[in-house]
Length: 399
Ligand SMILES: Cc1cc2nc3c(=O)[nH]c(=O)nc-3n(C[C@H](O)[C@H](O)[C@H](O)COP(=O)(O)OP(=O)(O)OC[C@H]3O[C@@H](n4cnc5c(N)ncnc54)[C@H](O)[C@@H]3O)c2cc1C
Image (tube, rainbow, N blue to C red; front, side, top):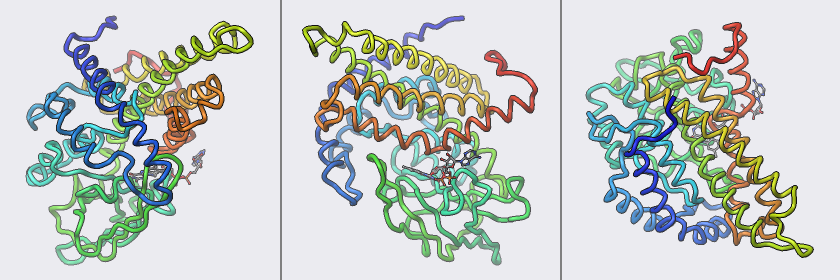
């Protein structure tokens, strides 16, 4: 067993760390101020002109398309490389992501036809188009089998009718991977189809934005007799669920990587504060309660890192069914960060609660991460169900 990183990955990680500290962290004050002052509006917390500059700089540094297969013009470095980069970027609270957004990349690579590759995949890989995934509905969140947005066949067209809710990237996305019911009776085995719906398609509108805790914004999407031809079906008719599961797996690992970066930053802040802050004639660092918070946080971060890197490594070996690993890292990393953020606030006292530090921002953000991409309870249920069905415990080395 070899725990060392390839030289190429070490250099990549180091480069992104320096870039994050030099170019991204200085924008944190702006992000905090914009988030606090925007009220119920959906003003982006990262000013678009700053995002544009960061995109240009990261392109120059060769940071785009890290996980994109070489045949599509990417670097083909895989999931572990992307995870290391996401982790480093998330040491800052500035919500900056590198193109393309990995989870939908996997969906598109797996399902696009030749024609869709030209129209969607390649522009997406080159950051000329951005995407969203539209699955959740007012009556279907954790339980996706309740989706009711209909895709009816009329002549040679598909006609979509229904509403989606809580969809990220509403005003930004150029196309929406939309999950619809084509045959209610077949359920998950043949009854759900994915469609590529372009912004501006007649009958398709972005509805209200739904302000909520933290920085992320979501939107309602309305499909009113949206007519699509067969070229807009992504993958096989009725077979949306298997590629969707694979897409979720990658997304959950990426969420875990984000948590690693945030926790790493918080622990660093905890250590600094423990060393400089004195109470009752001694530094906080001398108090056992404080020492244990730092130790517990470090142990938990280490465990989350090992689990996440292992899941990424498995994905890089070409293993597609990562449901167990993805569920476990999603639960463990998001709950780990919840505990670390809480301890970080406690060590900093009033300062930790203030908007002069990034801690309370992370504290609110992580609350979202325990619900999006499936709440913790659903993932725990999935893991238990799989183990009980197999009648044996989890095998780290099973491929
Ligand atoms: C910021 C944000 C961004 C989002 N972005 C997107 C997006 O881009 N695209 C998209 O499609 N969706 C998106 N969502 C929706 C998100 O995926 C759903 O909110 C999530 O899947 C949970 O669904 P729900 O809110 O309907 O909760 P429900 O399904 O109503 O569940 C509520 C709670 O019930 C409990 N629960 C449910 N089932 C079980 C069970 N079997 N056992 C035990 N407990 C259970 C859990 O505690 C759960 O938190 C986003 C949501 C947010 C908040």
